[in-house]
Length: 586
DNA sequence: GCCGTTTTCGGCCCGACTGTTTTCAGTCG
Image 1 (cartoon, protein in one colour):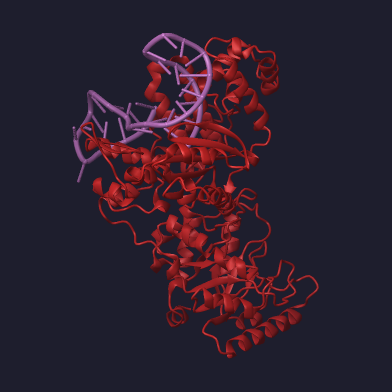
Image 2 (image 1 turned 90 degrees about the vertical axis):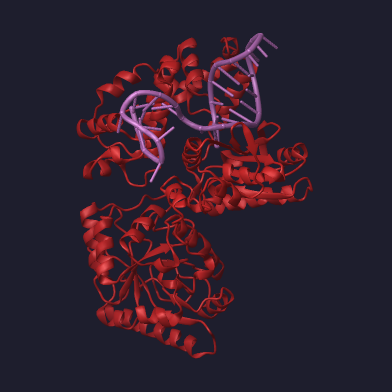
């Protein structure tokens, strides 16, 4: 474990978990709650959204729920000196090899420690050495271990090689879940099946696939699940749940409950874990104990067939799954002042679509014609769409040629609008923000547009200050209305650019600029925590699919889900406005 | 170690599954 000045949130979480593990190895009974605190602090920092170092730069780490005086002091020491005397001392209690072993499924702090001690693992090539010992039958001989655990560890080492390096993006995970549901539904062993966990919460990325069934025949239902043909193997199988390993190291979990208590299971297995822990702590103070089976009061279990009733019994409004992240939703539900979240049916237009009009761009052009897009928009009950092809490339075109292409596009859009249809087309453009903040199109070309989007497609690594100046400069022109896919992140591939969001939000608010929620499942950008900040500032947002073909226009629901995760209402999103109000605002 | 519409002291979410035991520890979500 290397400690240095610029630890990322992931690294900090790992460090804190190592400290927790070290305490657990030393004397679990003495440190029981300290261990819990450290792993909670690890969770809290891992799920932060903002880098902990930035929070430390600008204020107090102890403001993070789960991080108190002590942990913030130690982390502060790391950020300023690159070291922590206290953590280093604690970590001496845990062998290097044990930290590696803990990443294996079914190996936690205790087993990792025992293995590294009994087998005298040096910390070099740990997994390779462990595999040799396993094959030689040495692990089974350690007291408390046995043949089965040894075999399990061998399997885990093998499977750790094809573990996915990052989490699945939401749309991919949905497809995997749908295939399992298809398989399940061909049997008649249950009343209902649901996708739960982070999939139901519509998290941008998903760790594993969680499913639940309401059934009076749990055994048959679990049998059916475990015989899923595309599985690699069954990880575990009991009376109420089972887990499968799928290809690519993906895990699928199923839980079952009779219909009479299914509402409690829906609540439990939707999570998040942090939401549930907070909910249970709250309930405990009211003398209630919560589980997937129901609510226990004075030892008596009350069942819930419907999830809404579960929250009602706790004196709360129903909390939409997208909000269940322990970010203040429980307090709001108790006070009955949760926001009225935007819904898909509220969306009246798509503000980023790329048609196949040949705009001679250096980026990609769309696959569908403007006519096809209008037809699709009609089927989605939209009143308007914006054609936002990328700007013509600067290479190979002089400004006059660019102007000419844009003129031709305007004529094409006017032609589309002249035909009998009920969807209005805006003539727009997605314009690159050049590294210095200028735009690669002339004033005259901008004047020809109804409005423009600007976005970053190059020079992603600039400093926060430079990047902020660059973006504000690009937003300056009156025809520029929307800052599109603003962090430029690609999930699992490219990190968000660094921006001073306070400055961006303030500029947008005072100059009537809007920030896009890009609904492409690879982007989902603006991220949910920034949506919530923007909403807090009163900044207006837009929804756009960034579709390059008509099929992708259906991705709007992902954008809406992100807006909901950011606590956004209909009023926060400009393209929920009817056409005439949108025009007025424009 | 953290935290506070019963507390600044005294609590701290809850259950399933597995294997190695012979009543429970370890791990996981």
